Image (cartoon, rainbow, N blue to C red; front, side, top):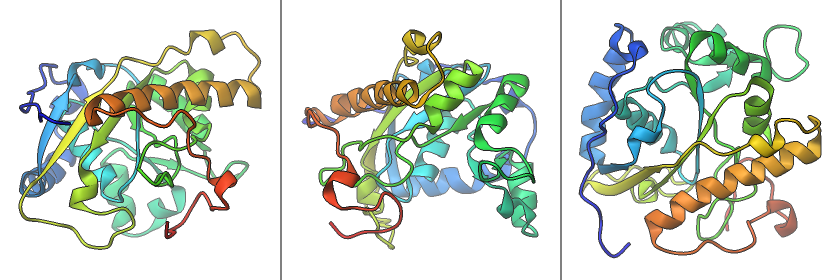
Length: 259
């Protein structure tokens, strides 16, 4: 971008879930000052994230510090940031308590008899009115220029199974705080990080279609298109016409790799 927009203060009102006392207030007291030290955050169209009710927030992903950045932004906008985490982590002393107390969502591997899988766990959002942050790419993008790569179908499956709105969000600048696959955080000077929230993804064309692989893949592509559109606006550039597919470049889709 040639001109960096001035920070925009979200106009959304606090949701009831955020006004209730919780351990998140302790986390916020720790992470918000750290966030101000690391970055100058600009949030564009934060009011597009619903202030009430369930939602899936779908961001792009290219730095291991992304969850902290998106978590801070979600809190600033007015909602509690929740992620799905492996259920085994909830059985670890202290860590498990922190995860439960902060409302993180435990999920077992699909088919496990011990608890809920991600699709079933997402159904609880309808009852609780909460939201969850899901990275459709599943891991850090392999795209050389850090555009969103091919997405996985988890977010689409959750959304179509439980009729949950998917809110696309893109961010740019976190790679200057922590490089892709980097192990060091750059503290000074604070880096410019821009976050842009999009309109809910229109998945109406898939509502009455069979819940099969073809439907979920097409819905996923629609979600990835919406995320990419937000990122194009932030970066002031056009993404490649063909989304990066690791399988076509002899790359694994999980774990670290060298480009």
